[in-house]
Image (tube, rainbow, N blue to C red; front, side):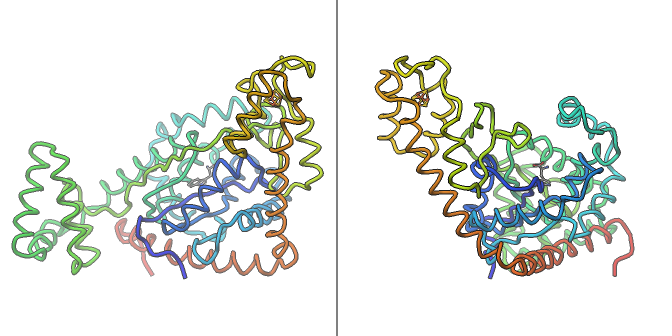
Length: 404
Ligand code: TRP
Ligand code: SF4
């Protein structure tokens, strides 16, 4: 049984980078776990995206997909409520990407900030390929193929959602016009019935003549509120409000959530490429060892030197894991040199050890029964395909391509 669609549809993806770490957990995964009970959620492993920055060595890809999937399940993503799948199992992403590539100006892709940024940062990888340039558009296809309203992403991905919106707008503008749109929409306006017909016309005029956004919102609510309309008529009425045609691909929104800063062991942001991570299923002894060696405020060279928590990465972990009371104890003890760093770290170590232990426990079922994972992915990918196929049917029809 999946969550119905009360708040709309959510889609997000994650690259299969191998075992996830606490940064991935607090930055994204924990948020997804919460969202799955509020929205109709589609979460996928973006294996094709991985190829856009690393096409040479793909041997570890299946293992990495497998590890991420286990981490997802261990963290509490529930295949009974959310649709969990692997991108390459749903070829409709590729078809939509191809079709969108026909209408996307090169300049749109060249000006996506991550294009130049990544080329500068990942100097040892070949990022001069067609696939790398097109990867934000592949992401747009990922989102639009499910007609998702909300896309939970980090700050660094907002530009990609913006590109998705522009692409959807362009697609709708080019192909959202039916030949007999005016006639059909007129019939749909009448189908609203009586007072609603009059009100719809008034609100539309108000919005079109004076850009009154409240009128637009009221008209939209009116259309949404009339339950006996067909889906096609509802789309026409919504499209007509803004003077466009039918909205075939709705524009999604980035869903930004406040996420805590997760420091790595060296004090920089936790990231696999820095080698400063604690994995979600890390061995508890390794967790303890790593955290005991973690960087602290450099001004506390000796036990008797007072420190400043706001200059210490361990403090960021206290903010995630410790109660108000423990935090006060740590901050006071640090500033007065009343406690040592190892003492200060202990409550954090205890919490993280408990967390990874719980995750390891929940992962066990899946590490021992790989066929469970296969079933979950097969079922999720099939569900995702059903939705994606519907979109592609409409897209092909709108573009006058064969539908079968
Ligand atoms: N590009 C995203 C990343 O690197 C992953 C991703 C791929 C994604 N497709 C997506 C995220 C669609 C949200 C929606 O993290
Ligand atoms: Fe950091 Fe705690 Fe040491 Fe202060 S006492 S420097 S907060 S680890």
